[in-house]
Length: 137
Image 1 (cartoon, rainbow, N blue to C red):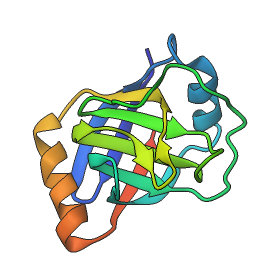
Image 2: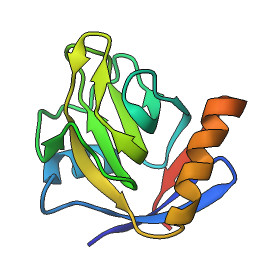
Image 3: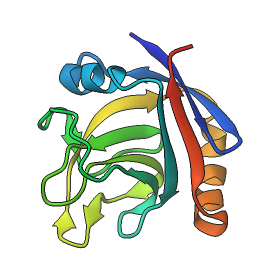
């Protein structure tokens, strides 16, 4: 199990890569680390923040994909119907775009400071984009 640190807004989380369930997605993401982005509140999916990545191609298809990530689960949508994106659930999520339901690869699970997930989501909703950094400590 590989450990990583995710700093989002003023919060720091520890997490793990889901190497057994999503090995290709984990390897592709590691190749881009440290990974820096901005998280904004989701538009249609419920209680989550997302990092829109445009046409960034991680070169992966679907693996360990879900439309219903649990709080603390991070999914990568590899692109297709909508743009490439990363989504972090902080509450109830039904992953979707204006085109309808989507599925993303669950490849990271946050394991610490989960009490700050909702605070992060509300900051993104009411205060705007929050900086996010994924790194291996």
